Length: 192
Length: 192
DNA sequence: CCTCGACCCTAGCACCGCTAGAAAATCGAG
DNA sequence: CTCGATTTTCTAGCGGTGCTAGGGTCGAGG
Image (tube, rainbow over all chains, first blue to last red; front, side):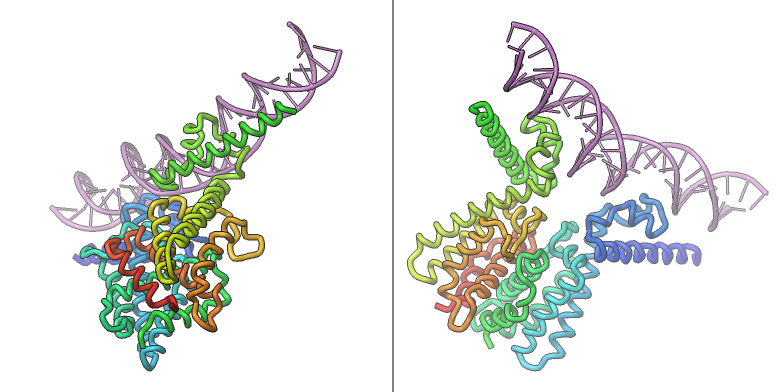
């Protein structure tokens, strides 16, 4: 049985390589540059090998999105737990979110801009996505204010962050004053 | 000289036809379905004709985006002027914005999601885009609150609306409670 | 050692955005 | 009205895309 185990391990390794390479190309040159040919050449296999791991490019994007969700959840929790008091925690959370989007735009795109074939806001939503939302909820729920559904509040706060992230990165908003926008967002939305 | 005038008029007509057709296909089947071949066939000309009007597909998207900006500005002003009082005005504005995004998703994408080769937030930004932002500013400036830059406040409010619009349409947020999210947004962000 | 099945690659499909160069239509001058 | 010039349009094709059918290679199990 050891042969099969080795093969399974090698397959898993190769799958990780595919995803890491896709991420690398996407971060460097954008998702449009992630073509099946280029990706195949980089991992030193032919194109059909990709299709033995993923149904197609969309599923590769989806897999990167799930990785990203796990990493984002960790980053958000790390930032929140390093801050003292509700306001500092929310500011740290918001900054960590925008930081993630700015530092890993390709992964952020995979999660929220592109079609990775993932289901959101449903019971069959993949666990990493639910957990990333949960990471937001943990810090934001306590500042939702009386009589306001924490889930709804988190959705709104998230939408605002998402808007800031995408509009800034698409050069729709000047990036210089991101800090002031975050301060204003927290001051107004959060009930401290 | 009348011959040239007629030709110019026919050219302008055809350009309008191109844009209207591109919009139609995009609204029905998404921008991915707007291919130069399909577009050319629909207008009953060959592909190269498209390139005598626009540099390429990107410029077609940009032209649709400018149309959309003009229409959005009008819709926002109409909604705002039909409401009495600051709060009603802001709520009407937000609803009109989200309504526009929901009703004309392809045009909204052309404006804010896709690359139409347009410059934003700069002095050489096309007039329609500046005017759409101005339409937001007109209603939002009066509820920015003391000591808060109206421009910055408008940017933040816009980002929140943009986040709600895109996340809702991409099935990242359940659409059922859009109304409650808007109410919460206005209650918290606007200083009345 | 040999067979057979898992694995992988070559080659190709239909489509994309875009363009060079030939063909057709239209114009103005004689 | 005719004919050359000019503008306009089309045919055909390039290099690229995501994806897949089919044949060959090579190693594992008997």
